[in-house]
Image (cartoon, rainbow, N blue to C red; front, top):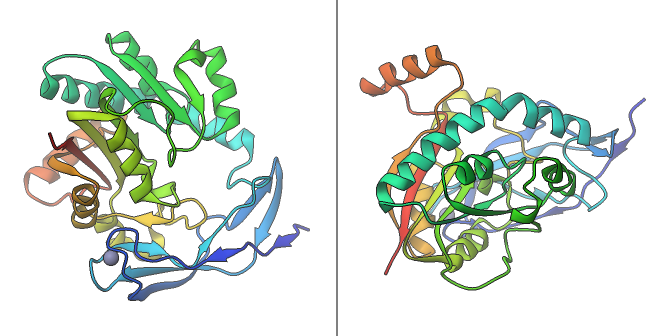
Length: 286
Ligand SMILES: [Zn+2]
């Protein structure tokens, strides 16, 4: 029998506009697995989470938010490793696509910083393409694996809310499927802006809540122990502006399957594909 555990939960204000006036959208969400892990040992989490939507700006977020003690994780280490191995090909394809976009807009390769760099797939591609690339990753087990990939000198272990180093030292900063996990998205983006040079580019990609709203409880990204914040185009745009960025354009990350990519392009051409992922390019105001 699996033991159950009560997690501490913290009430938060809207991460985009700061209002605490929100309406409950979904109650008692338990996701695919409402479990946490002490290494490989599973523990059931007591109670479900609620998804709320800010009445002022429309941002959707989990409230109150469960807080994981340092000795617990949402995934067992073996599952985390398997996930990164299974999705690497798709993420390498996405990295090629995004780096080509950044190179086209900047007119050159330069210094790049990858916040939440995971297994270093984007860093490897960036280094191959001639970027000077560094990253930060909060998972100690993932950073340990970077050693085997020859990336250890490019990555620091730490959290994105407080980056080390000088202001304005990067030409591009990337956050791919990271912001929805963070406790304080505005603080993370604020740090990203601090290390980005004026005129430099920030690329952020999150699950698209405009798509998730259509699916309700069946949306596979609705994972309240991991994903605390659910951005739609309007709310992501507003937060980027708030931290001193000027949004420039949206981008998507192509799926690994060429057939799926063709179908998405076809539906998008007729305005029938809202996009399960939401990417935005923005520049730091000069
Ligand atoms: Zn709000």
